[in-house]
Image 1 (cartoon, rainbow, N blue to C red):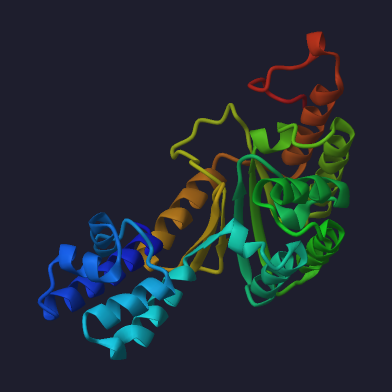
Image 2 (cartoon, helix red, strand yellow):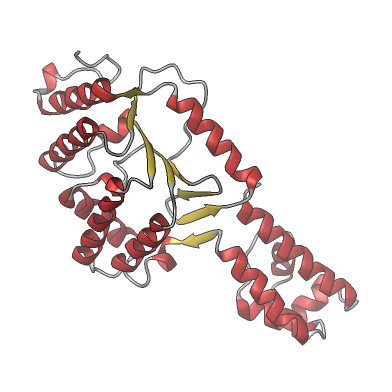
Length: 292
């Protein structure tokens, strides 16, 4: 169970406790609140997140308005674990990137694993522009794209900070995904190969042909040893509970053992770049080994 799910279940248990203390059935509470009875069950079992208004009404119906602020505070704590992209991007792309800057400025160790794209901190401006535009289109975010791109580029300075340590793993599909025009992708691959050559970002490539001992279900970022961010299609998850963070550390360690680094990683990236620009009949299989 994730931090978010655990926190929501805990809030539901507190609501059920208040209802029990008030001597109300779920149906009675729902009637007095003007809700469908199923809503009470969903809230109490952690299958739906209560709004602040729901919590204040619940406390009032149970005759405990004095508990409303504590319930709302518990909900606010829950929200730190799960934030929808619509809400995260409501203030604009620049604000979202500033959040990343703030977190990265106070973190010292980064373990990054990406499955479908080059991570933001390693992106070129044009590649970033296309990736941010997808968020604008999907979530209806404010169209401050250029400000968002500039702020994302500002994050690259952390790669030169000697007080920070980066380990970045890219699964081979992240190099091949056509999420932007081919010229933009090849430019990004050239830049990525350059970062490997310069020794920045601690970049390793996990080939599709690698024999994996763990399943890379999705990308994730580990900050220091106590926080994991996971980006889903609809929301950003922030995991801080040790039981939730530890599996990510172990999976990253396993994936690290399958990656190629240094000159091998640079050659792999350049081989992928060449395969993307050859005629279809000559294009190499994504499962084949890159040229040495």
